[in-house]
Length: 226
Ligand SMILES: O=C(O)/C=C/C(=O)CC(=O)C(=O)O
Image (cartoon, rainbow, N blue to C red; front, side):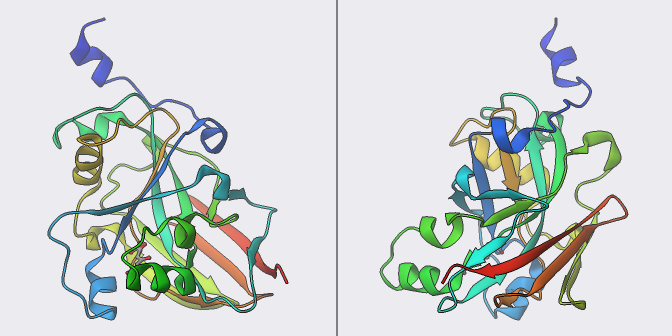
């Protein structure tokens, strides 16, 4: 098949993306509203980190935290890669999307702050067990424009995050293209596109509920490990 036809292929059905994907790639500080909250400048280029795929959990499982740690919720649009993607241009990048999910980029701020002070990697603060709750697979066709999707999060019933991906500093296409210059993205890989303003800490026995447009909602409880 000619390559231009391959690149226009319809969405790929990947309901088992969290089992087959080999990477979770995150973008940090990608929302203007969060940069404003945190009083930091907009990044000049995407700030990229990896989360371990062993951090995935699905609805029905619990987020586990130690009582002594500060762990933040961050609601995000997850982009699921549908086909191998290496050094793609921004104008072609959206062709490589297989679908989407709603995700929580749970972040252990206690560990991350120590890592920042020591100029150490973010891996433990971002990739601990249960740090990546995800929704079901959302087919590509259900989201016409990934740069214009509402997302929200409630903590124990109170709205804490209420944003839209149109507030992202780097577009979905830019993120895919940027990451693909360095690492090949493969079917089932997940790209977390950043979180809007309102991120904050959870405590044991809290309940997080979040949603993406009228496409999906999900609920997770927080349980202590100690
Ligand atoms: O700056 C930090 O210490 C941590 C930032 C984040 O965790 C931000 C994100 O991951 C995000 O904006 O999505």
